[in-house]
Amino acid sequence: MATKKAMEVVKGLDLQRYMGRWYEIASVPSRFQPKNGENTRATYTLKDDGTVNVLNETWTDGKRGFIEGTAYKADPNSDEAKLKVKFYVPPFLPIIPVTGDYWVLFIDEDYQYALIGQPSRNSLWILSRRPHLDEEIYNQMLQRAADEGYDVSKLHKTRQSESPPEGDEGPKDTKGTWWFKSMFGR
Image 1 (cartoon, one colour):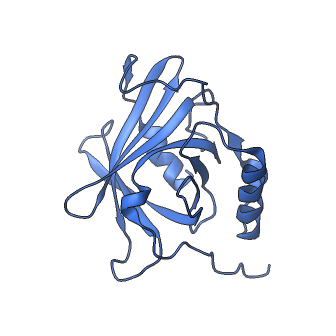
Image 2: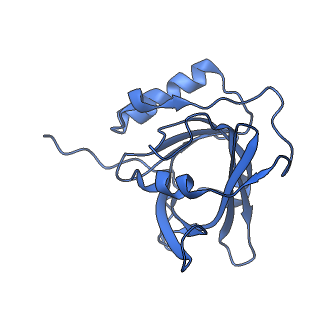
């Protein structure tokens, strides 16, 4: 089998501009991910120490599932947008940190949509600042991912409501294990 070329990763990502809320337009779901999860989103907040607080949320049958973690540059001296995301996993005792790769493969110049992957090419996310992404842009992202060696046939579009849920409303469902498992494609 031919060796896959090195993945292109964004250089010089402006973390400050990257912060805030992103909606999941599509992902390669892991087998642990709720099949009917919707309104899935991520909110990133830059902390004083330069790391990023990560809040991942999804709604399943009206219940909010979430998990929080921390993202940081894999190599502080590199200008490549290769981050590590660490989640502390509540369902297991002792609480253990689980770390996954988060590589920004593409972001538009206005920081409105992004393509996120991993070196294993098992996981892929298309994120947007708005709950819906223009079809033409979506197809460009698919092409970009395919060019980087991803199997885009596995991408699953995430259902986003016309009016996304506000804040922390809805009954809490803290079974957030699928989030970090999806980080590892297990």
